[in-house]
Structures are given as C-alpha cells and as structure tokens.
Image (cartoon, rainbow, N blue to C red):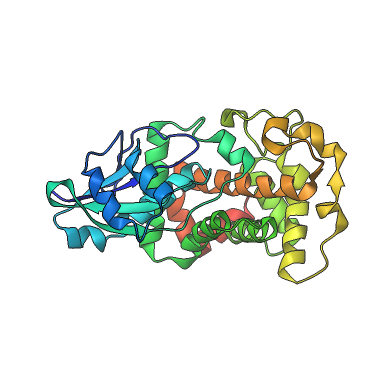
Length: 305
C-alpha cells in the first residue's frame, strides 16, 4: 500500500500518536533510500541526508498515490505538532512512497521557527492523550470553515513561519485579541487575566524551563496590547520595548539567550506565544470549542468572565 511520511526534524520528539485524520507518529519508516538521489534537483544534499536519517515521522497510508498527493492531512498534522509544542523544525518535506518502496513524489512545506523558550519546553508536561486531543481539535477547527475559529490558528502559524519579533508579536497578540474580543486595552487585560488567571505564570512550571524571576499574566498583558497597537497603527515603537535592559539578564537562562543584554521585546515575544498557546489549549481541552464556534455565545462568555 502506498504511504506518505514526513520526518519530524524537531528539537524534541513527540510521543507515538494516532490522529483522527489518519496520520500517525511512528518510530521509523522503511523505504528505498537510494531513490532519494533521484530528487537531487529538488532537495539539497543536506536535506537528502536528513530524509534518509529520519527517526520519528508523521505517517499516512492511502488507497493510491493520487489520493495521498492530493491530501492535506500531512500538512495539517505537521501544523498540529507545532500547535502542541511550537518549537519550530529544521526540515519540512513530505515524501510519498509507492511500489518497491520507491519515492514517487515529494512536497515541501513552510518551515517553522520557535523561540528559545518554546524549544526548551518541547513536549514537557503534555500527555499522549492531551496531545491527541489538541491535534484533533485543530483538525476540527480547520474543517469547520469558521473564520473566527480558524484565524487564531493561522496567526499562530504565520508567526511561527516568520522570524521578525515585531511581526510575531503583532500576529500572536492579534490572535489573542480576536479570541478575547477585547478591542480596548481594559477589556483585553481583564479577559485574558480572568481566563488564564492574573497571577498565573506566563511560563508554567510544567514546561520545564527555569526562569529565575516569575512573570505573571498581569505583568505583561497591558504592554502586549500596547506594543501590538503601536505596530498595527504604524506608530513609533516606544523605547522601553527595544532598548537593552540589564534588568532582564537574570530572568533568562544564559545558555539559551547568550551573554548580551536583552530587550523587553524578547520577553514579550516569548510571552505572546506562550499565552496564545495556553489560551488555545485551554479552549480545546476544556471542551469549549462549541462555545467558541458561536460568536454570540462566546461574546457573552467573555463578558461574564
């Protein structure tokens, strides 16, 4: 039977998973690796080597080569992995294998870039059951056709594809604002703080990333909204966001962020990603997708927080 696979070139490997769209995370895939050389015009030597050295991969069987080539299941599953643990990847190529284990087709997808925090966090604190529930929630949203449900996911995705911190913050905070229906600073702060908890840590202990000084939701909510607004309206970026600050140095692990002074912008970039991840995960794992899909119900729920 023909199959497609996509090597999971990640900082940390997920557990073995089985998604509702038929894609599985498997240990390894057996195919005729010599046929990779036939694709030298499309993939460079490093990519061909990495494809041949894959360990865990996304894997999907199909009735025919055409059905696999036309399917979006692998691309959706790759994004779902990043939704669970947005650490980025260093290879994003799907190969379709036919008779005698020969590679018959290939597709290149966008690569994702995580942050220092998200790469260190990896899949820490995520159970197999939670990972599958989160992935299946992603598929449900993508298949719904509901723009207000899909948009936050696409903003998360585009922020991970882009590496510019200002654009990432714009995307991720806009996604949060869309979810919380804030529009105004006070509404955004209040709803974010009540949904996740004003004193809740931006970087939860279960992530396994040690920060010497806790950062809470209330510490960054106002500045996230303010910086997003400055970017959105083409205003001059306030100096406090981009100037170097020695006060931030003790906050971040030296091994991950280097010896130079940090900028508040870096903390807000990490915070925006973590808070968006926590918000979306909570909506799915708490069984709130039904409420989220109905704009009237969700607006009333946000007002009652």
